[in-house]
Image 1 (cartoon, rainbow, N blue to C red):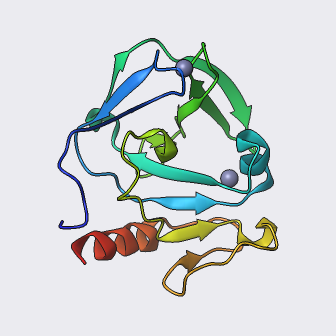
Image 2 (image 1 turned 60 degrees about the vertical axis):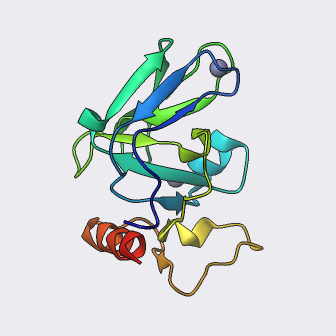
Length: 156
Ligand SMILES: [Zn+2]
Ligand SMILES: [Zn+2]
């Protein structure tokens, strides 16, 4: 695990009133280029870092929540800082993980390395992917290859 920092690591919103701690390594780090992520971030893509709920704790503040309906119809609660509006995490129902952090909110982002890219078909035309990035036209139905790619990366 030489490519990972020592845990716990901490992060928070842009104004500092919402803070969190992650006590163990994430399950994966990937980017999503779907049009929802583009409008949610006001940018080209979002970064996502699924973690186990038990490893995550809010240490300051109380996140707000709004229910975003995905194209699939699934409702995914979006949790954000009520003061500055920064989106901190989402709570996808089911799946191999129960909580997805927006890892740009970490205090130290130097170790983040997306191993996969979702919704490549709607990626902005200037975006380039490294050869070792697992690319999906939309999103994987099976998350296992993404977790394996992450494990391979962190073990170097
Ligand atoms: Zn804030
Ligand atoms: Zn997306």
